[in-house]
Amino acid sequence: MIPESFIERLKDACDIEQTISYYVPLKRHGRLLKGLCPFHSEKTPSFTVYPDGQQHFYCFGCQKGGDVITFIREIEHLEYVEAVRLLAQRAGLPMPEDVEDDGTSRLKARILELNRTAARFFHQCLIDERGRDARVYLASRGLTKKTVRNFGLGYCPDRWDALAQYLASKGFTQEEMLAAAVVSRGSRGLYDQFRGRVIFPIIDLRGNVVGFGGRSLSDRGPKYLNSGDTPVFKKSRNLYALNFAKNSGSDKLLLVEGYMDVISLHQAGFTNAVATLGTALTPDQARLISQYAKGVVIAYDSDGAGQNAARRAINLFSQLEVAVTVLDMQGAKDPDEYIKTFGAHRFQTLMDTGKSALRFEIDKLKSARDMETPEGKTAFLNDFCRLMADVSSDIQRDVYLSEIARELDVDKERLRATTEAIRKRRAASAKRRQVHNLKPFVQDNPAGKSLAVKPEELGAAVAERSLIAMLMQNPDYYDDIRSKLTDEDFVSADHAAIFRAICAQLEQNRIPDPIYLSAYLSNAQMGILSLIMATGKEVTYKREQLDEFIQAIKQKPVSREEIAQLSPEEAYQRALENRKRRFSP
Ligand SMILES: [Zn+2]
Image (cartoon, rainbow, N blue to C red):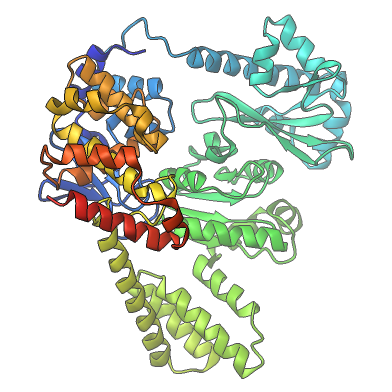
């Protein structure tokens, strides 16, 4: 555990406004700061920072919230201790020496060392007599020795446990091998995960080998196999070859489907190529790309699956202000084949003149309809206007409205009017949602959804939140509350955990502050606490209400038989009314 005296110094050194501004542009709104949430996509800011007093943040759109440490955990995907370490580093505070972090850091360091050792072993196997078949395969794909060396490619012999034995001889334990996911445990003991496969080491931005991809040379098993997630590797947050591509000097990244595509593109001079690791593009990967490039060129396979994946990718990028171009590789199934057939020069031309993402979408909509019939044409135009309504740039909208009006010989102004009508409707409903989101928590929970309690217990759960807000505001009520209530009385396990953490602070005569609580609560619980504080600030509680809250928590008020007759919404309304009747100041 990190000593609280250190957290106290960290709190002084890491102002929440400054820390968050590093990632999110914030604008002042009275005593609050607002910005576009970095954790979900939005066009109107619901991400709120409360800079004074109990420094915390809360997003009314995605319910993430907490203190400055929780923020760093969420945005940098770090464990608690690592987040503290990062903040301390930035603030120039030396970490206390004796920090026990349940061994995670040590295990991570061992896994990285193991991966490096394994990568060297695989590479050696590829270049000596064991790797003959693999070398034949790579040569057949046109890879030069230099490329093979650059990418550190390797081969895992088609034996039971060649790697496991090698790693054991280098002092790695079975547990470490299993944690690194390079072996599995079978009835005959450990066996190599990547037997008989060509190996593609996955290297992160710091140059660590974090995982492996393997391509089978036989018909056994899946053609490609990737490392599972380990303490040092999350598939959904890494991109293959980004370590090279980030230095390509191009402000665009070229996104392709697989390892071999990336490698042959790099060999052909397109060193800005990256690939996802056997999965569809994830929001984390899209964000990663947006950090390193202004634009992305998607060169997915021309088959149906590839084209669908391209559409999903376009959607993710459109929320991140990354310009997207989609390559239409006619006459080839993937970039590798395109370059082999038509040459690198033509591929470059294709990239320079590639279709914009919008044109790609429009053509997709078109091909889904029968454009020969009036019905099909009308349906397409409706789809088209809905798509245009999503485009935020006026100029871009105008360009495509003109283009389609011309192509289909229809009145451009009619298309514009339809598009504008859809935009107005959407803006109005977005505004309604926004207003709704900003109401205090007693009103913003549709029955049972985020409270994770039964509808009939909602009244109690609401009272729990009120009680926690009251206790945060009035620590002097603690003795009174403690004598009447324990965390076991709570219906929500999250509320109980928050209550326990606050009590632990108060027991040490410390004013509860989110930055001390975050060591004991999950990120989700910090989100709830942050919501309670954000909304609780608007309410002044009176001491008389305390007993009412406690009573509501203990008696779980509405009868179950009565509730059984109601829909969840009615039950929720009922709970709200009860609460208003009993708790209104
Ligand atoms: Zn959010």
